[in-house]
Image (cartoon, rainbow, N blue to C red; front, side, top):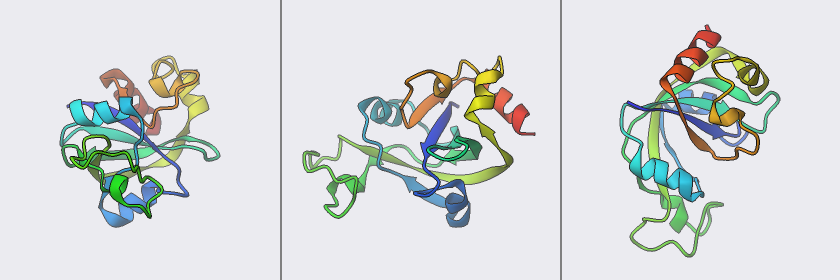
Length: 151
């Protein structure tokens, strides 16, 4: 099993939306590194932190589970979608999506500033200067440290 941190802006799609829906497609990732994570590393049963970005404060708000293997992101073919990519090949291999479910919200937001100050979590990819990926790996030690902070 692998652990991940997945970012979303709460005014676009937040943890409360996933809790309400129960299960949803995580789509719209338009970065080749992220696409490769989805294609090569993600597996059903993996777990991820749900991170609210571009919010005050930005931070980890809960957890969720990965429900599916990666599959072609249908939004790449939808001309009405903000994620439409007219150069996507018809085989759907350019951009991928996964399904997520079982969101659990923390009792408080773990702000980025707190993650940076904690010796165990300060090395997380999300804490690194210039880190802009919407999905990034989390080590087992980082996963356990964040869960301990959330208690």
